[in-house]
Structure formats: structure tokens, C-alpha cells
Image (tube, rainbow, N blue to C red; front, side, top):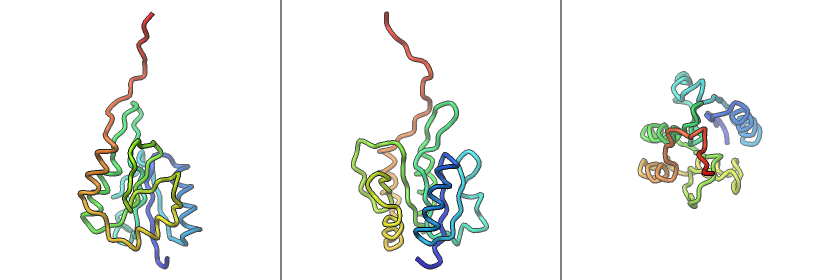
Length: 149
């Protein structure tokens, strides 16, 4: 995978670093990473055009407990520009997700997913719109529960 450049964007620094190390050593890639709290894809504008694959976590977590499928929203813009993506979620889905660009972190090796994505054309926007339905936004998560006595 010569001249492979990968940008990783997740919710947690340690997760971004772990994926970065794996991709750097196993895929022999030049890697960059960030976290949602501090970065957007566009913070990397000096290398944006050189990136081969963007590895992005589907959800962004907010301190109020909300979840937004920001990774999917950003990916729709990336694929319009011809970029290749790998999306993943640490949250399970009840649905079987079968897209070349979606990494099932339990069942698939990331190195195999990277190879598959490089061999495939960028996904269609409609595929991301379908995936977005499986990962809806959640604006808030209640911090208190009501119980009956």
C-alpha cells in the first residue's frame, strides 16, 4: 500500500491513537489523527488533498449525553469530492450493515478493510444516506430515571 495516507477522526484520543498505530505499522501508511472535541476534517486542510482514506467514527458524543451521526454527515461531503472513507461505530447496530466502506470492528480486520476500500470506488451518497437511517441522531440522553413506588 505505497504512498497510503490516512486520517483518523474519533471521539477519544486513545482510540484515535490505537487506530493510528495499527494503520501506520500494519498498512505501512503515513497517518494523521484527531478527535471530534478538538478537530474537524477541515483542520487538516494542508494535507486534505493527499489523504487516501478517512477513517471516521459514525457518532460524535456530546457532554450533555447527546449523539450526532456527524461522521456520516462529514463523509457525505467527502465522497462528493471523490474521497474514500471507512466508517465505524463502537455502538452495536441491530441491523446487518453490509457496505464496503463500513468497518465492523468485531468481525473484520482493519487492514483487510483498508485494502478493500482502496480497490473500490468511493461510495455513493445514497449508500451513506441509507447508513444514516441505521445511525440516527440522539439529541439528549436523560441523566435521571423515573421509578414508580
